[in-house]
Structures are given as C-alpha cells and as structure tokens.
Image (cartoon, rainbow over all chains, first blue to last red; front, side, top):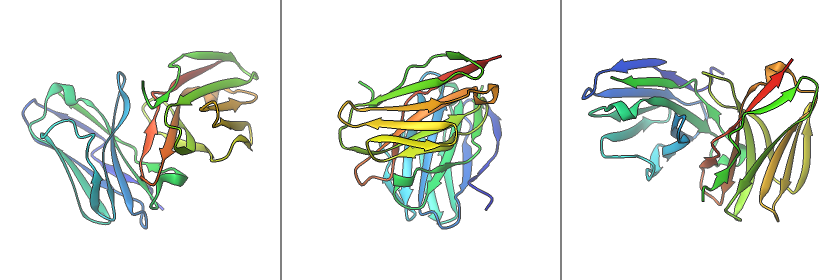
Length: 114
Length: 111
C-alpha cells in the first residue's frame, strides 16, 4: 500500500493567492482528516470526513479555508486568499472508520506564504 | 486547560538509559491513547496504542495508562540516538473519529 499521498510536498505562494492542497487516503479507509502543524500550536485538527461527508469543521480557522471530498479516494483543502499566517505544515491522515486504532499520516505539505 | 498536555522538553537522556515521557488528559471519557513519533521534517508515525489500565510492552517501548489519574506515559528502554525525535501523545474520546494531540515532547538521546 502506498500510504496516504499528499501533494504538493512544498508550496510557496504570494499573499492573496489561492492555494490547493491534495490528499489521497489509504484505500479502504473511510475517515479522512486535515491537520495543521505549527511550532506554536502543535497539531490542530481542521476538518474531518467520514464516508466523504464532512463531520466536524469547527477547526477551520476562517471562511478563507474550505475542504472537499468528492469521492473516497480524493480530498482537497483550499485557502483563498492565502495570508502569511497560514504558513505551516498541513497533514492529511486517514483511518479505517473510528479512530480507536489510530490513524496514518501523509508526508505533509509545507506551505509558505510570502 | 488543554485537552492533552505534554512537557515540551527537550528531555535529554544518555544512550542506553530509560527515557520516560509523560502525558495528561482532561476528558475522563477518553478511551484510547496513542504515542506517535515525529522526526524533524517528517510526519507523525504511530508507535504505540493503549486502551486499558496498566502496561503494554512492544520491544523497547512500554506504554502505561492510569485512567484514575488521567495520565499516559511512554518508556523507552536502552535509548538510542535514533530515538531522538518529538513524541506526540493523542487521545480518542467517545464515538467521534478524531484524535486530540498534545504539543509533543522533544527527546534527545546523547552519546
């Protein structure tokens, strides 16, 4: 299994531009999570999906952030417009349903907004 | 109060010693607990899970859970320089699918 696949690995963009991060979960996993990691705040859950349906988006910081999961094998996290304070590492993770067994992280996207 | 708390460290231990990492949680409904290891610039990797009070051993790693005191710990025996990383504690509560993470403890194993 290829694991959770994220793209791009690195993204540098100018303030005000739209940024789209992509994630392919492990096949058969029906829960998908988007986390943001910074030195100051650690790992923060932004949103998670179960069976492609958003369950909890209370961690999405502002309306500038949106996430979709059009099918079981693909999800996007979009920031529009981007701001320097959005600079962080964004991780996608997936699990086979309930998180009682933990979940598997992708390699992350390091976003820098200048 | 954060839901899952860890000392940020760094915790420095000599090679071959036992490293003890601690974590406390605030929600008594938390049922499952996890330790993730994260090397610098890499993603978190699951190394241990524990669901019941007591100890759980896996190789050089032992996870300990005390639900009455609401703490979880991870012991690493015979610490190696390759164990130098940040260790994240996570808790799963109720029927929700999500995990709540602590901010991590940075471990340094010195030669």
